[in-house]
Image 1: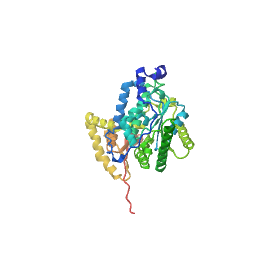
Image 2 (image 1 turned 60 degrees about the vertical axis):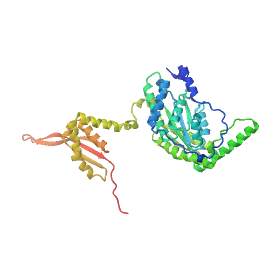
Image 3 (image 1 turned 30 degrees about the vertical axis):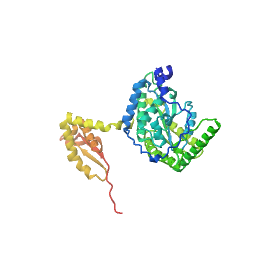
Image 4 (image 1 turned 45 degrees about the vertical axis):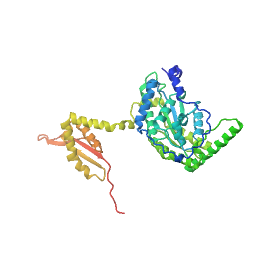
Length: 431
């Protein structure tokens, strides 16, 4: 059933759960600065840091609650992160307007309203990965984000980065699962944009402290006049030391973690210094560039069933172990012969090429008359850390001479050429 045929594609009870999942954002009063933060006992992070376990737990809970056919997330998601004071709020509004998304963004700090979460945030620390991931995914299930939205402040840790990769894989799997069904239009190819606004430490500290002073002055005016809404005063905006600590948490934990996403997604590193207009121009340029690299939906569907390289190698080691164990159990004699050939005939040649890291070995051994032996050979080398490729060459060679016609009779000979590559050793030279 298309998503539009029911209100947001969810039953009434489920819509009520979604509405309650995202807490309202009240007028935020000024919070007093924490006193003697350094005197408090250091917070200990006791959370399990297994990204796969965390993500699968969160996903399973949501799927059990909403149902697989209702795991409908925005088609386009901007994952916006940046240094403290880099202007994420300003540029979030700009991206929403540019894309025509009227809804408010998903702001992680607004989702984290529990006392324990606020205590960590006020201390400039990060909240638990499982809690944050669960809150973000639950918020994104809200039908108001059907077409797209901006997520401000996720991912921020290595675990969250891995969870984001797993999330994308799940969305792709759902797309392929429902592609030829009536639900194809609500399970579209996901588009992720990773945007990181970066400014240096000195500018970040200056902006944070200036923001704190401006908020205090504004709140004093509101309290005196009785007009307007109070601004939130972040404890990390009150002193240079607190602001610098918050920046270092971003640099050491968030920024370094986010760089790992370059291997999977289009990654937009944006200089956050300069005027608002200059930074927005950089954002538009980056998004335009990504659009020029993305496949159209119809084009993607032609090749969607072909697995990407990362999916193939993800469980390659496990599959290799299973195959080797099966060889030893089902074909022990053949497996033993191939292993002995590698040990006795191949390895002495490989060892002589240890410096170059590559060897090419020709063999006519009869063991390869059995087609399964070639797979065994490649798997044995793979398990030992080598890359092996086998080519079959058929050579026509003289066999005998016809005494009457003096014609040379030939026969075909099979030669297996095994190319082996591995990490070589550089020759040490004197200074």
